[in-house]
Length: 362
Length: 260
Image (tube, rainbow over all chains, first blue to last red; front, side, top):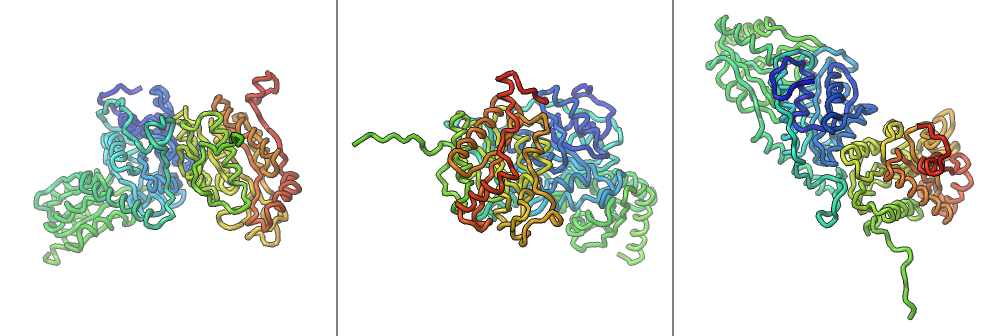
């Protein structure tokens, strides 16, 4: 049992679960899948003590639909899974988007496609940032790079989900899930039930009309209006919650872009590149939808080359290229299938692009 | 002039929205029975209806209660989420045979296995109605549909599924019955079962489901009377009308060993 509010040595999975509780989650629906099983195990032990509910669904398909029902009933609700399970949840996510319901889900990404493996990967970037099933919506997506951030971002995700009435995904990987680090725990909040004028359940008919939670809009104009409302929320989210970290040289020759565990590796690479005389700056998104295009755009004007490091074959790089808009070359260092780039790999890539840029006289 | 008394008024739990069902369809009958039961039990303000996917997709417009529209087959999972957050709510799903017995088989079986305190109204008309007459898991052998144009065969599609018999093996089930919406006596019997199913939920007696053999004149290619005869002569033979489980009655009489 974890003491509240203290600094503990804890795994990413446990920090995520405790982050959910700290954020006010008292209802969890999930299905076992490696590498995130410690989360449902933790929730099954802790939530009943708090008067909450842990329920092991018959599938990820059922789990996300239970989340949908719980969100419709006004709960702060959460599920966690890993890549193949998140793929199965796309249907329910789409219904939650269409019904404008909040929830938090965590994807501890593993190697894919297919059954893949249980190693770390970042190959669900598109699934996270473009996905949320069919139709015109997306998950707001947060990308922690440490156990502490897994805890903090998961706790904070509930407020974001409520604010924009949209599913929020915490996108991490098998390494972050299972590595152990010191983590300062946020005290568990006893939240008053937020004002949820849309929620279904027992009510006094004198106090409100009946509520309908629905994503069926047969009138084209009505469906378009829903999509416009969702898009407007995303515009607002871009202004209000876009977040990133920066690290390294003030006058960079090379701009590094990476998120999650790749960004963690890149921090060491920035320091080694500095020692080699190649001033390098890292920009690491903490949100990838909304995407911090502005800092990447402005720093790319000052650098001679951009290097993207990701554990996928070129997914994240598309958003970086959209931000850079051709201002300088954008190169890719990709490892996948459960493999991670080493610090040496990143430094070598930085040296290579710096040499190329130098030779070209950029 | 004699004073007139309306002895069977329009149910409070139904809106006055005009239903979109075809002429002769028994969805309207089923809706009315459910609404009457909600009124009689006085649970309208606690009730959450789960509309699913099929001809009854607009159920949220017809039942004058809180409502959630669910993805195809997922009604019992959505109902589970609501019930676990709001245990005082009376939660029911309204599902057709495509929704429940085909794409939603896992969800209904596991909700029943958990003894989830929800009620399911299961409309079995042996055909996919909304998508225009395709074969369902409950389509009888030999029955012609738009995807079994020469009649359903075992070789091509296997056997029709008897949902009640399947669920009757699960101890979590508190009330389970199959009825038919064909004649006035059968409709009265159907209402008794629907009421019993809701009473089971109110009493915390576990999962409850009522299967209603229903007619689809449009996609059966029959007039309504022929369709009623088809149910009486063919469907009831394969899908016998029966109360499979009534845990409250078993507890009241102290008899009837429950598996649970």
